[in-house]
Length: 287
Image (cartoon, rainbow, N blue to C red; front, top):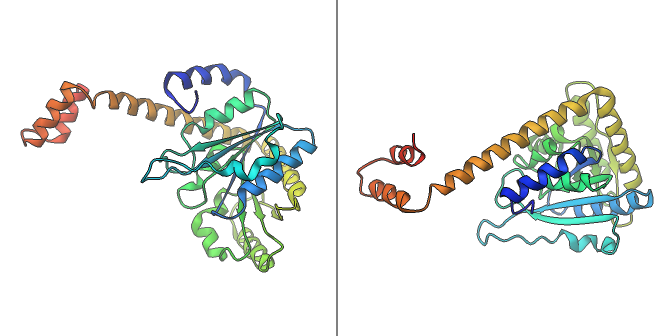
């Protein structure tokens, strides 16, 4: 219902709003092939051992050519298929820039409302448009690999601004030490005070480093509360969500004007050169 949008989304949002606010929202992002899904799988296993319930929203890109999405992240999370303490949902971006489906915040709220302790939002990748994940979650985890590039690439991709925790996955491979030094060097040069993102070595395939990652997530959540940054992030997140809802509703109403006799008549006038698109649009919208 959330993914369909429209009235069904509005009803679900109204019902879940007063019941949400307890879950820790964790964004997991990184370059394709960094091992995000494998790390998420290991994270779920560790959380379950600690007695916590985990919801996962795995956001897949929608093809600009076919309009479809593979939605294949669940293939790597099959260990939890029969565990009712883990819920995994693959969602398509449907062309939305920023790596997040428009419905993701509302979907996370549903999982929060029904009692999941942590909601992990795994995004399609990291880059100059995918950093939107930082604005939609409490804590952002950036996953990198040994040999991924240098510190300049980190700064260029915007990683230093969005990461609350760095994970060097596949840390058993050559180059892990150099990657750590690059990240630590950039963190030393980063301006400001407050939270300093830890850099955690992990091998998600055998669970190494996952307990340390969970501890870092807990420490960051505690810092969000003690520093007041959590409330500031929540305010920004809700402002962004409200703006997205208003934009989606305006777009829906605009689409209603792009069909029927009035639309065809306006299009004919533009095609014939009797009027320009701006004037025709104003007439359609009643301006």
